[in-house]
Amino acid sequence: MNIISRGFRAPGKTRAITIPFLCFCIFLLSACGSSVATKPVAVTTTSTTVPEQGSISYPIPSIPANFNPNTPDGNSVTTREIMSQVWPSAFYQNSNYQNVLNNGLLDAAELISTKPETIVYKINPKAKWSNGVPISASDFIYNWQAQSGNRSHLDVTGFPYLASSSIGYSDIKSVVGSNHGKTVTVIFKKPFSEWEQLFRFLVPSKLASEVGWNEGFVTPSPRVEVSGGPYMFASYIPGQQLELVRNPHYWSTPATVPVVRFVVAPNPATYPSELQNGTLGVLQTPFHGVLYSDIQSVVGVKSYLVPSLVTEELLFNLKNKVLSDLKVRQAIGLAIDRQKIAYDALGAFEPKVSPTGNNIFAPGTPQYSNDGSLYSTSGPTKAIALLGSDGYHLSPKGLLEKHGVPLVLTITADQSDRQILLVEQVIERELQSIGIQVQKANVSAGVLESSVLPTKKYDLAIVGQSGSPNATFGGSRYYQSGSPLNYTGFQNQAADKLITEASEQLDPGTSTQIYNELDALIWKELPSIPLYSSPDILAFQAGYNFIGASSAGSTIFWNANSWKYVPPS
Image (cartoon, rainbow, N blue to C red; front, side):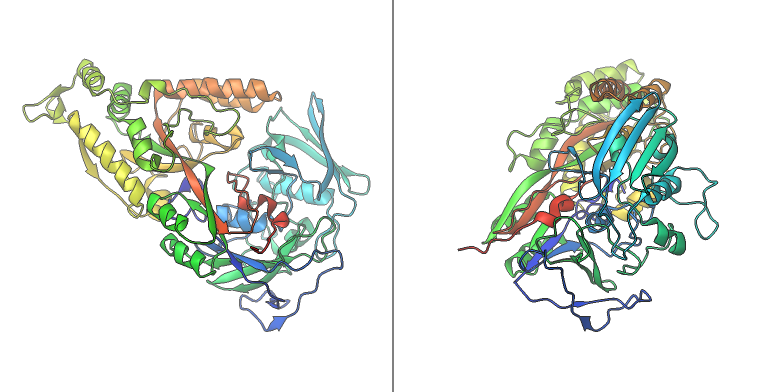
């Protein structure tokens, strides 16, 4: 999911918790994969594990509907948070949004040729799934076929594989194993610049071939969601919580904290008290000023604002006849004060906050450049003059009209998000000040995401959109013709050409340059306006060493196996 609800990142930003030291027993699911917890069974670990560090709990909005993050139903931040330490990825993103080789899974991953683009992966000889099956080229081949978009590849049910995205995988010509399955050679049909983003959350192929890619990983179970990482599934209480424990079969550096518990806690307003009483130990959640102030007041808890790659955007529905007029969109961009909106939202905590100036790259990423200076502050006089040149005039009542028809627009936002509703009020007030009538049409976050945006049943919408340091997987998806995330209906041949050209550049500098050309084009055509980059709140019990990072491919859990706790002296 890519639309962000400020209470929780859709459907599941971050959440967390710590619990006192314990010599733990856990519930193990029965071998048949029952959805109810059974009696406690002791879990033993190998002699190579580090001393007991206790357990830590983390809040989630709900139990995921599917634990395969590569499927549409499993494509949520919550699923990625849980599975990031269970199913291995070729690369992960650290807190600086850099791609880092997972040397637990791979000894090497190298681009050996550009014509054709050829990548060679060398799998760690010790790498194996928790059921004893070696991790091999078969897993890479299966994951490619399932996400290739080629409908000739069928799931065990006989239906085509359902993949959350075929980006990159559809560009692959072949995946071949050698060296007893421990070497994987990937050859592309055409260049694909962001190959390091592929083969993330590697699904165990032998097991998936039996239970199914699409629906085989709906219920969490150590029998089905076998582990190839430092943690494995241990227990599951439907609708309440699930636990991961250290994987005793893991061949690389063992996890430090023995138990990570994901607890359903859908109301962020309860976080301060739960941090206070120790129910929660760590959380990362979308910023809200009141919540952050309350968390800062909790004794024994550290809290920070960290980048999240989420940008609050004002979307224009270009299918709307009025908004298909570029001059109207430009006038709205001139009428609203993005600097004031950003300061009102974040200024009390980040005095130097400024509006986001890039549609493709988020602030904080190395590729970011500010291209939106023309619309940084409001210019109501310019806005009215521009509308005047477009045939609009102010009526005696101060309302903009064209051919006797007033300029009336609806604005839609998440009705439960107090911070965004304040932003909505500012935009409404500023547009009405130049004669544009604005009517609120707010809905729940779920309705906004599932019904309003995909069907374009809105005029203006305020939406939090998640990006990525990797533009092919991030901002460009919102502007490509035919993309399911292109909620504005923007169609531009020049933009599509730039997106294709940039995605095929193997030189990162060239790719970045082309994507920033795309950004300049988007500012010119204005299908949407980025308002400000919304940070996350990272909070945890004093003593832990958490580093937060969240993006399309990374979460706070990117380094969970190295979390440490030092009891306060």
